[in-house]
Amino acid sequence: MKKDKAVQANQQLLQAIPKVDEFLGWVDEECRAPLRLVKKAVRQVLAEVRQAILAGAEQSEAALTRQALMPLFEKRLTALMSPCFRTVINGTGVVVHTNMGRSLLPESAMAGLLAAGGRYSNLEFDLRTGKRGSRYSLVEELLCELTGAEAGLVVNNNAAAVLLCLDTLAKEREAIVSRGQLVEIGGSFRIPDVMQKSGARLVEVGATNRTHFYDYEQAITEETALLLKVHTSNYKMIGFTSEVPLEELVALGRQRNIVVMEDLGSGSLVDLSRFGLAREPTVQEVVKAGADVVTFSGDKLLGGPQAGLIVGRADIINRIKKNPLNRALRIDKFTLAGLEAVFRLYLDEAAALAGIPTLAMLSMDYAAIKKKASRLLRLLKKAGDLPCRVASVDTESRVGGGALPEQGLPSRAVALKPTSVSLNGLESALRSGPIPVIGRIDNDSLLLDMRTVADKEVAELAAAIVAVCKELP
Image 1 (tube, rainbow, N blue to C red):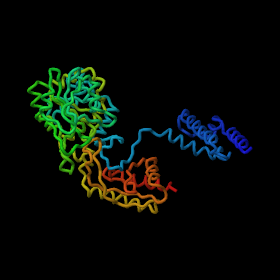
Image 2: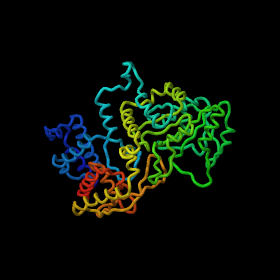
Image 3: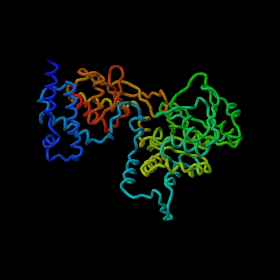
Image 4: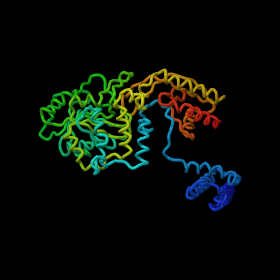
């Protein structure tokens, strides 16, 4: 009997749900949202109400009135009108954060993007001759100037750069690689897989932890086209290990007339060891050591837009440029504009360290970070009582982007410890706010590492925390 009454009550509630046209009549005529989105928001709200009734969660017709439903509609319409691609405040302390867009671009690069998008340009027009030009020529000279290479090429990312080089230089032939260098990076990109896709035949040499010169020497056959060295930038092997220096591979390649290629992955044009980071080979050093081809990323330690950079011997780079696959992997005008601006900053190392956000954050001293943390703390305390305890604490930042694994940088963070909700609840609330704030949970607190929070974001971050905290129970 009770069951029948419940079914009957549900039926009455379902019948009381307003029709779409009725709901649309409630919408303010001043609403400037596209009609299709207004209708979509209405249908979604009504569908949620219907599901709640069927699940037994909704028991009153009061929830079906205009007064009750309009706030739900407005919230849903706001969500539909909001861009999916949004900026966030990175409080994780991970400088090159793969999931948050990796490197930030300098102001000069942003100005270049605006110009490239809003005006016509000489993308493939030679202003000197008045004829068709090459987009690569716009940055190749700068790239060679900075790296010391004879020639250069830019494609859309480093995975593409490796694929293009292998397809050009070792297709249907052998490429020799140390077992300890068969790495996997983010997105399940594995060196053996990309080699297979390129048509190159992988020849593994050595053991996982130790590879010797004679391993390469004995593996060479008439089918060998390439000696490939992969820099293991995303993991570290310690203990009983050894690998063959690039200079020795170059000598072997010259002796046997075999191309030597090094994939640096997260390539750097500046030695960052002076700032407490582990020593990494720079692109210039690898080129000087004699590698015929070098590939590296533009959006990691370099601090530019997403790109794959290829430098090396002119005759080899020209072969790579002529590969039909190159057109499928080419960069657009925005990448070119961003890269040129970043390259020009590198012409003066001091300007690069100050003006390229990635380098500036990696080289930032502890005192400057602590000052930002103190400023945020003052702004939060000035806001009055908050449902969480706040404090400034020491922490460690990370480089990120698959570079310098486990390398910590001394930093300072503001720690939030909620008193009215769970730690996960606070993290979720900040992440879901109008200005998403992303931190990391550590030691029963939500840490906001100030290394990756820009000076101009401190006040914005404080306001976002206060706004979210006011909504907490």
